[in-house]
Length: 154
Image (cartoon, rainbow, N blue to C red; front, side, top):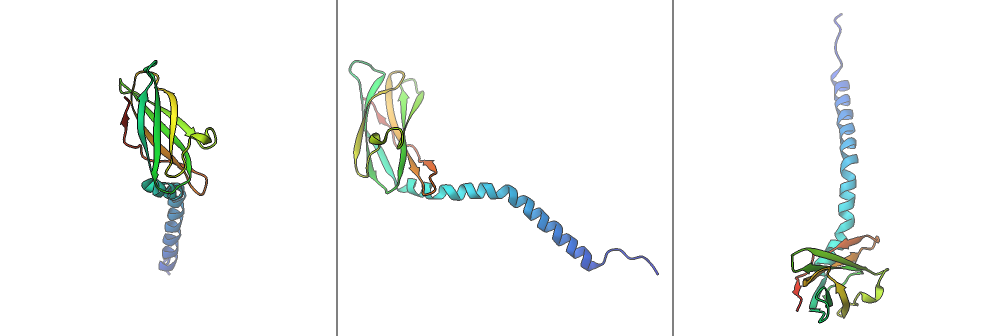
């Protein structure tokens, strides 16, 4: 009697087991990226609807490095976790001043409200300012929105 190799059934079962093992290995690498992406979707949705814009930027009469910035929450409904005020100097370099709900709660506006930040230090002659809202999701994660249109300092 001649020796035979593995039967077709055993071969098929081994192939299925190898494919399942490969799927598990690939999923273990892909799952964290998918999970992170899903967690940021609510914040990004809120960012699309949110409109916070600088209204004015007035340079200090005594120090060209200082300016007073007024901004307004025009529309959108979100939990504001903070703001990033992007200060641009005349040489084109930028400084980001972060304000959060925990460190400076009185500087964050309510919906449809304006606020003023006085004596912001640009670290050089002030040129323009823009704002990026930081939205807090239901899971407590902060998502930074796209930077607003810049306003020239006068």
